[in-house]
Length: 316
Image (cartoon, rainbow, N blue to C red; front, side, top):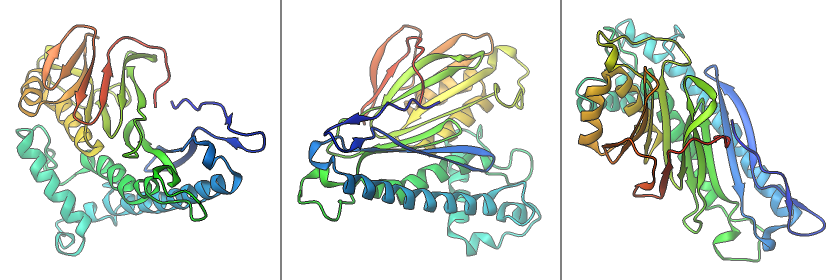
């Protein structure tokens, strides 16, 4: 869940919301869209906030339409989708649809990078669903929210960095999150990672400036992947990366691969993650190296701070 801070005031007339939040439902998933306006006195005027809210509303409408379109084209559960057509042997979309081409290519690359742990053909038919949500979140933020970090309030008398609409933006799609922050801000998005055995408990926190985080596991959908060796099972895997698209791919691959293969992948690609074994043991990976100690450290080149101490603070 997302913690929304109460309104604060920079003057006696106009409330200044610390966070603007909209929730939409697409693909049977709640998508939470968050925009943090600049908290400066010079922009604490009603007209500026109305403009910021207007720009966010436009972005939310565009994101909603985009996600519905992605669902129509890529859902394996819709008979007329491009993926369903491919499953029936009709591959014309590889020539006709640029997004279909992109995801097909990413799926092929993911299979190579993960040593086949991620395989869009693992059940004998093409199903890139393990990539599509992360790609959709990443693309939606880049196309529709990131411009808000650059778009200036049209009637502002200020020409500095904080004449832009907002300071930070984020999309949370069912727990897979992409955040971005203005280059002029050191704001950090604080994100909590749930205990799969007790979802009211946060087992780790991270603070991300620009990047993505994704979780894969069994606590929401049951044991949909099986391993002959029970010790190999990861009940939950959360990966922190420069993009939610990559994080989603690695989290899915790690759950499919099992613990031993995941450790190899984490080392090869210097991955940052929190893994929960079927026994409940929590394992921490920083730049691919496993650490069982409680620690706080910078784990990404773009200001990602990981705090593995148990916390009751709400997650993003």
